[in-house]
View 1: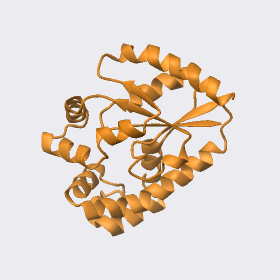
View 2: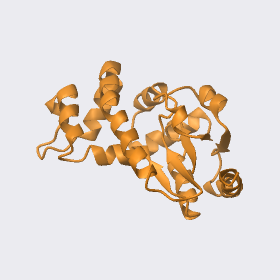
View 3: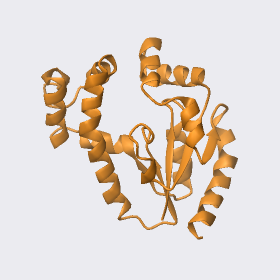
View 4: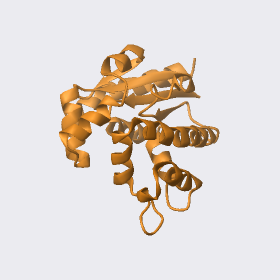
Length: 198
């Protein structure tokens, strides 16, 4: 099965692109969704995260205070690395297990930090969703109710736009309306089906 790694900077529109592929019946495995599942109340990772970041990241019911976690890790790069060392292996392991159960010509693996986690070899092909950085900033601020400084810090923690474009096999321009993605994704779908059969 052909594995297409879908990636892009924060606020670039990866979720929108993934949803369009889903509409074609393509299986999509999402690293963010898996990370969320792995950090729900009672999951072993939650205890490890609390040990790493301090009990202040837990709410009264034992669930993670995700906003607090986000604030902590973007203020402290060392804590961010510790959190990633806990979560990333778990996410890739869970994704690998889900992959083993799929039966399709190709699948989309939505992995925002594909390059940052040095997992390029985990996929056969890299699809980058791209838009100008000022658009990313505006989208992230609007979506997550962040200040410009917080959104900028999040963007700065990811690899550069230039680096993403450099390693991309395929690029989707998401600087216009969502409707403008439909035709290029339709072409990519046909192309990936052809690739998977050869």
